[in-house]
Image 1 (spheres, rainbow, N blue to C red):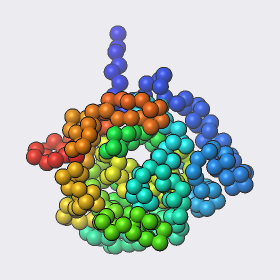
Image 2: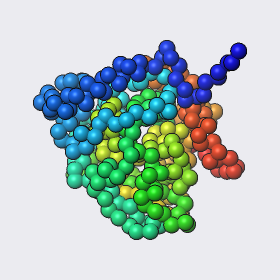
Image 3: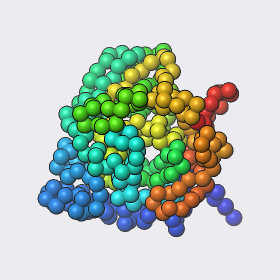
Length: 324
């Protein structure tokens, strides 16, 4: 008798949202978009979520994108309304209810700068970038350092494709990502005690890992502003504060960057920020997490359950503070 032991990322049949139901919903959305119905009724009315009308985003016609069935999870999807209204985005406030304030963000025109140790520095319009990239949908777990979590269907493209476009020099070891900076729309950026603009970074090996994903959409639609539109990072084995939102710049360098949270509270937030239930935050345990969709308290998994993909990256790093 063959006994199959599921991997940490594989789905348990009884707990996941039915693929038929989810794909049918996405097909309905696509049909509505084609008929112009979403533009006329607004996605808020249709699905009760804090999205701007699809007509405001030139990329709306790209979604839904093909679903990559390889990336699966052991939990049900977080309801869309919760995932799009319970958000961290310090540029718009230090609380979770920033979805309304984030609508002030202007996502067009939007350009992305690629500079530093690359063959040729460039600045590319976000829609031109999307046209160059192989868009797909992946369902990932997302774990916040504050010990809450969700499961969402991100749309976007592998970050290794952007690295390929950038053509970094052989000596480049890190990619530094920077969030937009505009005090006129982001009240949090008027708070002088924060080291704006928000930056964080990955090693080249992390950036080109198969899991590392640059997000442009969510739930089969363009990414909402409060979730980091029009471009954000998803590195699901790391705590959420590493996953930069509303990116305007990728800089390649041979020097390890000092990131936003390291500058602010270095003894609490390190560069690596890999998830480990056995390493507590200085002020709370990381052994469990609260699923914001169900309210259930569940055990935290090492590397958020993605260890088989990423653990080898860190095998020769004895002495590094890898987990906070």
